Image 1 (cartoon, one colour):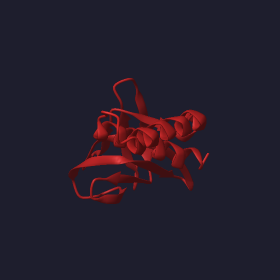
Image 2 (tube, one colour):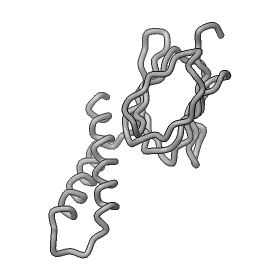
Image 3 (cartoon, one colour):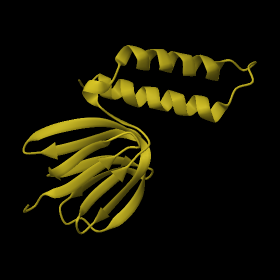
Image 4 (cartoon, helix red, strand yellow):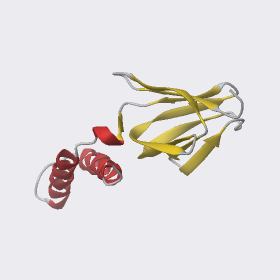
Length: 134
């Protein structure tokens, strides 16, 4: 399709999206990147963040929790361990996860995996950010 970008989003549990879109905005380890049809080929590591798909004047939002994106002449593929559409976010559960992670990080006496707690907090914050945009 002219001036459209072919996009695939794949997780271990499902093919989350496949179709032609106008633009994708994603969070990489270097910051946010916007991808349009004809973008220079590249591979990038995704950070935890909100993915925005723009098509025909509408936006669709998803929480993407890491992974890789490959942009080629044929389009774009995103491979991620976890992704959720905004309407799939359980805000109450995300708030509870945030509170648990914050409590773990505040407890200096406990023998905890700091990195794991930080990642849990980061996941919860992305979900809450997206859940607020429902």
